[in-house]
Length: 282
Image 1 (cartoon, rainbow, N blue to C red):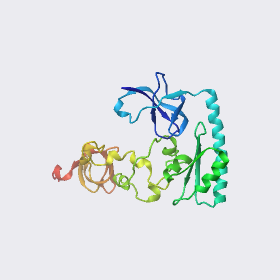
Image 2: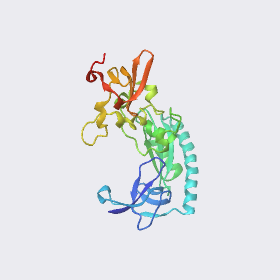
Image 3: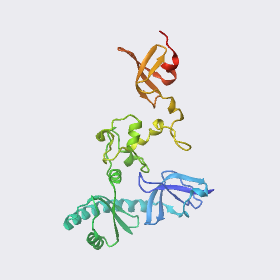
Image 4: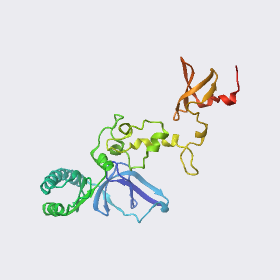
C-alpha cells in the first residue's frame, strides 16, 4: 500500500495522485507541486490515504509544500495577467488574420509557460503568432487546439435542465455517449433535444443508461432483469382486468396500462402478468 493525495488543478479536471511525504492533507487544502509543465498550484480533493501500488501508473512526485499566503497572492496576480494576456492574444490573432477562436488562457504557477486554448474548424498555421506572443511575454508559449466539449467546459453555461453544465461544474472527465443511449431510454431523437450547448450529445444520457441497457455479459452494468420488462403494445393481466401496455418507465419499474378507453392505470411490473399466460377469464 502507498500513501497518496488526490489533487485537482481546475474545478473539473482529472484527479492526479502525489506523494504527501508523511504530511496529512485534507480536502480543500491548497498545495504547490511540480508537474511536467512546471510548478503548479492545486487543490486537494482526496485527503491522505493508502491505495494499492498497482493502481499507481508512474512514480509519484512529492508535494512541495502547502500553499502560503504569498502563493495565494501569486495565484491572484496570475489570474489578472491571464485576462490581460487573453486581450493581447485576441488582438494579435486579428492582426495575423487567423481563423481561430481564443477560448482561455492559463499561466503555470511559476509563469514558466503560458497556454492559449483555442478552437478552429481545421488546422491553423500559428507559427508567426507564437513568435509574436513570445516576444511580448518573454516565456514559453503553447497554443493548444481543443474540441467543442472542452470549450463548453471552460466557458460554462446553463443546460436545458436549467442547471449549470455538468462539465463546467463537477464532471471530472468526458465519457463516450452514443445515440443508442437515447434510443434505449425511449427519448426523442430530435438533435435539438438531446444535444448540449456544445452541439454534441448530452453527457447526462450516460447517467441512467445502465438502467435501460440489456445485460451483455460479465462486467456490464445493464440490469439483469431487463428481460422481464413488459413490452409496449403487449397485453397484460392486472388485478383490475386485462389491458394494453402503452408506456414503460424503466427507472421506476412501472408501466402504464390502458384497461379501457377511459380507464388508464400505472402499475409496477410485479403486478403485471402476460395475458397469454394468465388464461381467458371470460
